[in-house]
Length: 255
Image 1: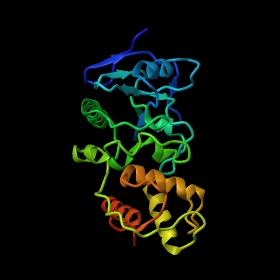
Image 2: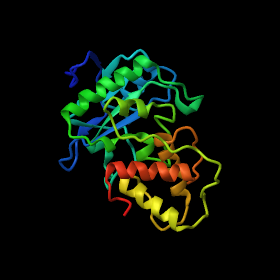
Image 3: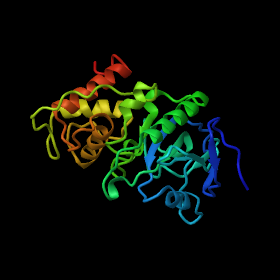
Image 4: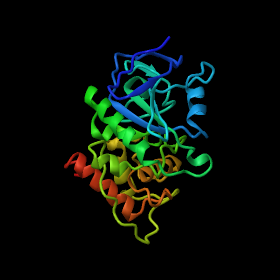
């Protein structure tokens, strides 16, 4: 039947049947980045536009930077699944999702081509100009579902997006040789880091016990903000990167 693209950029339209009205009068306040985890853009489009798949997304960007819209921004696409961010559980109702063609971790995560990232940045600017989305709310699928997802992955250039006015980022603290904290540890510094992670938006307990959930969240945080080493350890580099990120977001968050 064909739709009208929301974006003013050059984009194709392909109908995706899996969408509905946004619930509870929610409007887009999050921009979620995904990778497709499939071998080609066509394979991803076929899945995203299949009624049997029970998934969809607002946009897809292929390796050449071609943009395809499948769901109108006013509608609730089915891209986030079970997820949480900053107290909200119905992420599909308050987000816009961009699928970025990349095979992902299924084989070996590949770098994102320059023309693809340029298109993602142009599309992101276009979306942010239409919606009230805070920089801290431009996030990855792994941030909102750390136990289930790894996308868009540690090779996604979050720092480049930030340099171009998209999202929130700080230079990661240098990686040292300290072992940090891991599963089974209990410490007041773990509790402080859990608090900062929860304040930033992650779903995590704040009891100072390093449990499996904390491990997943720390890995998700590292993928986004300390991508050179994804080990789930709450080391000095990860803690300091988190503190600096929190300070730039809200100066009194660590007090």
